[in-house]
Each structure stands twice: as C-alpha cells, then as structure tokens.
Image (cartoon, rainbow, N blue to C red):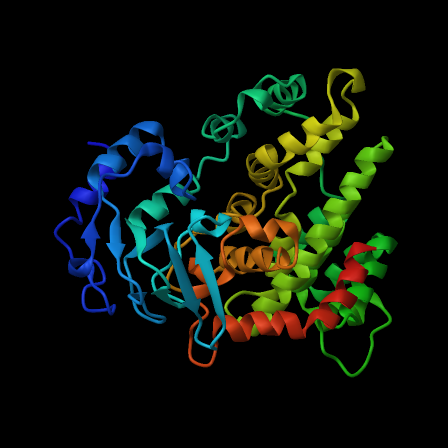
Length: 442
C-alpha cells in the first residue's frame, strides 16, 4: 500500500472539520477526480513521488462550494488543508486584515491555511472548487531525515536534467561526496570557546579565549552595545561584554561572527556573491533574534545563530567554484545550483562542525514552510517565520505562501500573542534591526 493509500485508509471514516466550519463536507458537491498534472502544481504536494501522486489522484475528489460559503474559521482546530482550484476566496485575519486569493494566482499553489489551527477565516467570493488534503500528507512532504549524508540527501532531491548535465554540479557533488572533502573550518576561537563552555569553563577562561582574536573581541563588544540589547550603559571591554551577554550567548555570538571569516575567495564575482549572502543572512538573523525575544519560546542568541547558518551550505560551494576552471561553466549555473545544494551541504557541514542537532536541521528546514513537528513554537518555526517575513516587499513574495497561512504562524496564537502582533513587532523594530544588521553585515 502506498503512503497516500495508508494515509487515506486510516482517515477515510473520520469527519474532516465537521461541526467546526459554517459549511461541512456534507454541503460540498464532490467533483470528478483530480489529475496528476494539477497535483504537480500544488506545493508541497508536488514533492511526492509520481506513484504516490497517482495513488493520491484516485483516492480523493475536489469539492465545490457556493458563493458566500465559509470554508473555515480563524482559531478553529483542523486536521486538513484546502487548496483553491477554481474561483476566488477572501481571507480575513483576527485583526481584520483582508486579502483575496484567486485560483489563477501563484498563491493558489499553496494551501489557504495550514497547521493545527486556522489563522484566518476563508469565505467564497464566487462559486469555488477546493481540494481537501490531510495534514498527515503535508507532513510527509516536509520531513527532514536524520541521515546527514550529502550523497543520501542529494539522491532524494528532484534535480532538473539541465542541472544534472552541468559539469560544475557533477564535479561539486563528486568532491563533496568524498570521505574527507576539503571543508571550511571554524576559527580556533570559536572551537576553543565551545570546548571551554562544554567543560564548564569560568568567565575568565571565556574572556581569555575571546581576547586572543582581537577582531572577534572587538565585534563582540559592538554586538553587546547594539540595539538588540537594551542597556542604559555601554560596555567598552571584552569582559563586560561577556558579563552582559552570558557565557552561552557569547559562545553563539562568537560562532556567528566567526562564520564571516570563512568567506574568503579570489574571484571578485564570487566575493560579491559571498558578501550578498552574508548580508541576507545577517538581516535574517536579526529578525530571528527579535521574534525569539518577543515570543520567549526560543533562546534569542540561538535564533540569531540559526538565521546566520540558513545558507551556510552555499559557502563551500562558492569556494569550490572559486577554484573551478572558469571555462567549464557559465555564471548562470551558479544561480541554478546554489539553491539545490544549499540544504544538504549545509547540514553536512554543520554536522562536521559538531553543531547540535536542532541547528544542523536549520538549512533543510529554513524554507520548509509546512514544517510542523510540535504544538509549540520551535527554533525552526522562528527561522521560517523570519525568512518568509524577510521576503515581504520583494518580487519573491508573489510566488510564496501568505505568511498567515503557514503552520508556524498559527502557533503564535497564545494568550495576547498573535500572528499580527508578532509580525508587527518585527515591523516596529525595523530601526533596531537595521542598526544591528549594520554591525553584523560590516
């Protein structure tokens, strides 16, 4: 029995949202079976294998609802998601924010809402046709395996023939699949500091280690004085900076600062790419820090580090390109390959650096919009929210899910905490984030 068959055979007798929406399943008119071609347009369902998609197409039918139907309501528990196949739906968040989704738009490729609770109310602005999908299928398309082998991870990716035929892609995969590939190493100060703290080193031990690298020590003092930390008095030496931050925060921040030291290349174009990558992730790390501080669900310094390592897998790739014969590839190939190898190479690299498992998983989870492993907000959720928020106002956002529609957003509903409040916190903190970003990006 296929994965899809197992999922549906286990839930076919269970009502879906029955009694929780204004229009239940019985009010829907079941349509003809859906085609595999349509399923291949839906994110993340399209990540399933062809056999599973074919089984899916025979197991489920689209549903049609009349004008003004309420498809689901904000705050209501759910075990399914809806995709809009035809028509127009209006979405209203708890704070009264409204937006519409048309079946012809890129947003319709994503679920209208996802997670264990709906974070908006959906109403049909025309006769609509929707596809109802179990949350269990959503989870099966987003699972990140515990095997951090680069070769294993790459074998699971759907890579286009254009990329597979690239000599640059083939050479990098062969290089990275070796038993002992040449990898960037963290500066000694980051490694020694982590070892000292793991052995319950004292404040003096930590200060002594950090002060050996004057560049990192100076940057740590800058960070301790940045707007992310609200303090009435500035610090001007390494000891006071460590006292303000704490030992674990100092370790995470020194590791974060050290990563920039890895971005060394000969070619001007590659250096520019690394600089742009660092700035992008520095901004993301500041967003993650502020959101973690607001939600109090995750350690802010750990969230800051997680933001910086999202795309760490691109570093060894660009360093490999820097030494690859320029006549054997076109610059456009870099843009095609980097997003594909980023997650598996990043997880592999962090594992080699002995990072904890929750951080090793970040490169693979950072853009897994439907990650939903726990009832409460976790580190990956913070990074996912921050990353999607970072795309707001950019051309990329048109091809991404609405931020209110992802599972991480629904987990923000906890007492006075809401998606709108938390995201407005990021907006209101833009000056703090901008100043902190200028320190990390420099």
